[in-house]
Length: 439
Image (tube, rainbow, N blue to C red):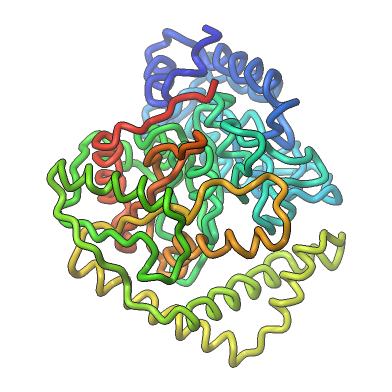
């Protein structure tokens, strides 16, 4: 039973539904694995194994009215990023000042619980999701399980590490500009950014060890149909490949080679591949993204930062957002509209856009400011997709010479999430790069 942490989420749920393992068994496995790894990796900010075990016992006796639902998880242990409320645990956003336990769970957590998920812990993030590294005063730095000398990404770094190392079978993340996809890329797992609500940058999504597991959890988060799509893998007929958005992003030679080789494999498998990218103005989109991101930070985190304080990073981000004038915000929204139209024009000609998930390997765990400025050049590969309002999937493309995972990003047209999951499942099979649990 102790080795169940290596089992896929899909297989674990099948065993739970069949009764060959119990929810209590899996909570015990998750707790043992987490207690072994937390002192080293620090993926969790808080845990609730006793509460999860009590719920697991009740699930065995009284499965509940949704036990026959297509998205029923039957007692699968999962983690949630510490930005959503779980009754009885503090919602810290990575801040040591926020320690009051939540009285009730968020609608998302209630939905997952109603569908048989057992939340066993809340994963680490940078304070108020601000900054390029998953580090905070509560637990310190979350380590990349492949190499402690490099970052695990942010801001859903704890989520990626929790699934990469078998502490849970699926993890909830939140993505504004790459916060699911970058940690997925750097930790060698799969992350899905679903289509957000109109006009939003931020969206919740799953991280898991392969596309089917991520689709299973997305079913529970958003509604059934994604696992069914993953179980019908079909390569997209026509793929656009852009390694750097025509020079808008900075991509190093090794990432270029790995992702180009992956796309050649897709062409060999039957995809028609064209080199193409949305037509964008680099200066305008960079200015617009900075405006939209800081304005969002000021609106979302400004009041709580005023009340409890915060580190230099989040204070600077809030201050920049509050300095945004109505004219600048209007110009940013107009540029967002141009980005949306540019991506739509591309999807009139192709089914899926493929890019690297980031322009370089994971950067050093304690980078100097100059290094951060340099690695920021690889970030547009994800945040442009956010500005365009598109769904995307990050999955492993290979490994660098240093053994670090490299991620490939698949992007679909807004609303075509199930079709994108179907394509991602086929791409994953074609590449054969599922990494399994990090030892």
